Amino acid sequence: MIRFIEITQDDIANGIPSDCNKCAIALALKREYKTDDVEVSIPFDEYVSLCVGKNELNIRYEMEQGVMDFIDLFDNYRDDEVAKPFILEVREEVGA
Image 1 (tube, rainbow, N blue to C red):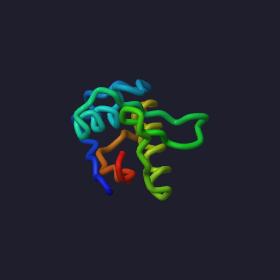
Image 2 (image 1 turned 90 degrees about the horizontal axis):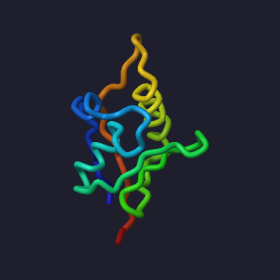
Image 3 (image 1 turned 90 degrees about the vertical axis):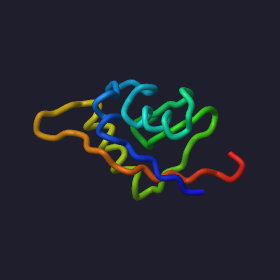
């Protein structure tokens, strides 16, 4: 199943940079999945890990770099460039 999750301007405004449980993407995941048990990370700076409970969500390879760029902008605010709302596409495993 494919799910589209909107990371909104409110998520960006209310998120806490560099906090894997309270960043903009984590807030959107909490809202979508109706749980506080989420974690957003980039282990070893290699890939994006989005976890809801014990399940890791899959994102398309083509989208991963854009998500990493968003996280970088969100975590490292710069006057010349800011994180913007976007739609995150995740693929859920059947039975997850």
